[in-house]
Amino acid sequence: MFNRRQLLALGTAAATGVVATSLSKAATPGASAAAPATDHAAHLAAAGEFAPRTATSGPVVTPFTQCMPVPPVLVPTSTAGGVDAYTIEVRPADVEIVPGLQTPAYTYAGHFTGPTIRARAGRPATVAVTNRLTTPTNVHLHGGHVAPDSDGHPMDQLVPGATKVYEYPNAQRAATLWYHDHTHALEADHVYRGLHGFYLIEDPAERHLDLPSGDFDVPIMLRNAELDAAGAFVFGGHPDNRTVIMANGKAQPYFPVAPRRYRFRLLNAALKHVFVLGLGGAEMTKIGTDGGLLPAPVPVTEVAISSGERAEVVIDFAAWAGQGPVYLYDGANPIIRFDVAPRRVADRSRVPRTLRSLPALGTPTVERTLTMSMDMTLRPPIGLMNGRPYDPVRADVSVRRGATEIWNVVNEDLDPAFPFDHPFHMHLMQFQVIGRDGGPPLPEDAGLKDTVYVGPRGTVRLQVTFDTPFTGEYLAHCHFLEHSALGMMLRMDVLP
Image (cartoon, rainbow, N blue to C red; front, side, top):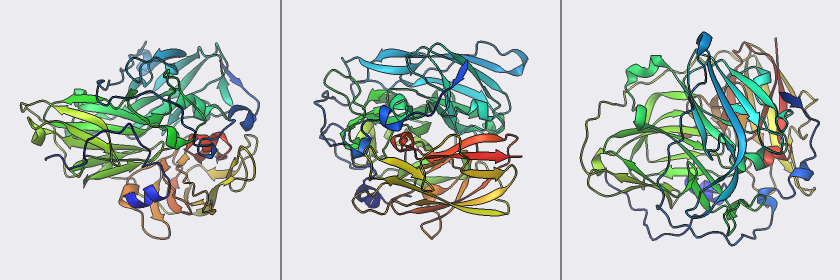
């Protein structure tokens, strides 16, 4: 697990505040159109953490006055031929993040947390996306094993009015994925304004585990924002000014729960923030990460997830029946209040001793080093991978389909004045972390991953097997999206 003191000291935003409360942290009981390369500076006049810390006079948030919604589940328009067909409009909408204020947002189907797609492993799906915005957009299925033309390549953009059909084979393990905008140089702005949603792949082969399901399997998207006094998003300011913490699009909500087990699928959709999540010292059970279930459940008191990462936990509220609310904290800040019903209920769910084994690592035949850094001599700065900013016409890494490789991902930002951290995300494949900072991986690194936190001056060693039927152009990049928007991406070509 990440060392919390280390995270706070290194500026990973675990200390980013929410509106102060008097709560203590005492433990609670028991047609697609290709677009030319975009000038970064034209679309990112200020780059988040590099901007002055001049917070706007934002709204006053009274915590726990709104109920946390569960994102609606999208219904297929057709299931003909064994393919689930969905349609989504990308359109502007006014949403209520803070009670009484309307926030202009970009949305999928009018929902600030886009509608959830619940897909089935082995059953393909298509999603027809129509752009009703006045700006180009596209869709990346984060964690999806998909063909290049459905991956949401940054230059594969839907111009206003265009429609594109994305094809998702779902030929992968059950996992908590998510979809979001990936338009080159605009991805940070678009995701910040609301273009994000859950995509859950479920596998009938896991039903025998009897984990909490149905109404007790709840996705929670966590993120932050800076709002002005009228409720509008402020983009381009310092991340420390993003003091409005949201769960499923509501600022510091409450959520009614029965005194029983719940499965929570936690997603960090913030542009730049590390959530350090806990119940004030009480135990929860971690069962999964980016690429699906762990081999066995792990009792934990904290879970840390950087931008783009997911974690699945089971919380048993039975011990709190009739004993008041339970708070989910980010560091020392309460961000969700769980209101536990007073009477015990029947609960047939369980957390078995074994969950799902991981695939064999294989024998690596290639080892390579990949670096991430910022060029601070320019304003705005430029993001670099292997010393160069992203160029969509240049192949930076070429891998062979079927090969097993070791990647040493190095954070090369060595200036103590700018101790940047960089969550690393690989498209197309999940990987396993086999080392960190010259030693073994941390417990937080366990399981199949597609995004991994790389701390300042840190190194993560990962192993990946490209067991995919697909070849073509993909990406690897920093998932602090303001960094990727500034060029911290590379093109990864998968060759036959």
